[in-house]
Image 1 (cartoon, rainbow over the protein chains, first blue to last red):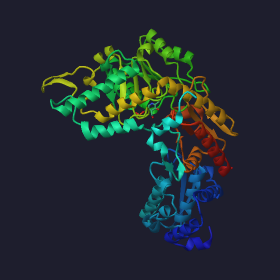
Image 2: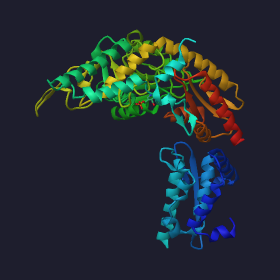
Image 3: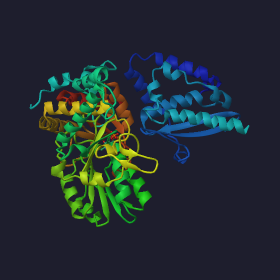
Image 4: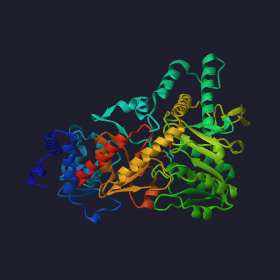
Length: 146
Length: 406
Ligand SMILES: Cc1ncc(COP(=O)(O)O)c(C=O)c1O
């Protein structure tokens, strides 16, 4: 994670992603990009792939590991499917490293804008939608402890 | 070729459409089949001209609707070669049919210490209702194992059967593996021990002729929507002697003879098991689906699907890194498979973008997935409106998937 991303707001990161995706001319390029993001995201360490960290979908599943430092929440995540993992990588990029309140209040507007809304539909049941819910819940739990 | 598939395809409006600007290749028939124009028009005509509640009014429309609905039952009787019309109950579908038998048969005929036999390849619909009634009654659920090809181990079945077996409930055709089970033999063996047999025909009636009397099945159930008919309607065939002895499933209108607050007496078959206003248009639409299948010819459908199965098996087997799950000697045109190192969700997502509708996941058969040691599969399930060219499109799609995830 570079310094610049850390300083951006959740909203700004989303705008940056929308811009990146505007380059792709067709769905194939877009999916190839997501697949690459999935391949590039390091696997979550086995010790964090616990039953507590699992977000089970019917089609694919996601693991989410949350930590906090200096008032900010950090997410690491993984999935057994590469496309889901690529999308997980994007979500982590958007939400990780921000203050809890900002995470709680954020709306994931970029998903529609880059034409990937179908992957967040409950019928897909790939674990993504549940993961976002889980990320916000973790942020909420953290802010309640403060 | 025995059947003019291009002519058949014209009967199905949805097959003319595109998805993501690609021609639709519909290979998810195991989940639900598409509807021919004759079924769509029957439904349309019913709501425009013929609708009223049934079995209730003296007026013209009510008796027309009742006649149409009962004619549909008659068609089902002929379709299954049942002895009596009133042995064919309208239900919401297969799941509803199995629940009806588990509940009503179980209530009367299951005692503590009895057992119920199912198999390792059952759909959740043919597992959970039995778990529920066995729990309630203190009975045991036993499971026939399968071999690696996806065939029932009949010797193990014989060992499970005993005098305490109340009922055996088995799928005719596996929705995940395509295996066609030897149900005649299963039924005969159960009858030797005095056990009844329910056959889950959800994946069978759309592919082959079924004769419940020749099979000597005690119960046989299926869904309308998988056999070119509407959703929300299905059939439970039950032998008259069982249905007469079983208590009603639900109480309400239509299923009663007389009601007082002290005592209610129940109506005759089939009404005893059909409480409340039924899915009238569904029943009539199911009748139209049967007419449609008969007009094509069930033997012609079976013969054509056999050709599709052989061709698809050959084409899929030739793909490097593809493993087919379900290689029974006797199987339907259903192919579950995995690609080396590629998650089913990933494969399914890309195939979808290519216009190919297949299903991914555990197909409501989680215990079967556990037996095979896999999280899920990609499943292509064919119908008689699928073409040889669509097999080529699927193969090309799979090659594309392999490239993208290499
Ligand atoms: C073998 C089998 N049994 C039962 C069912 C359940 O059918 P329905 O959902 O129509 O009740 C299905 C369909 O998914 C099936 O394939």
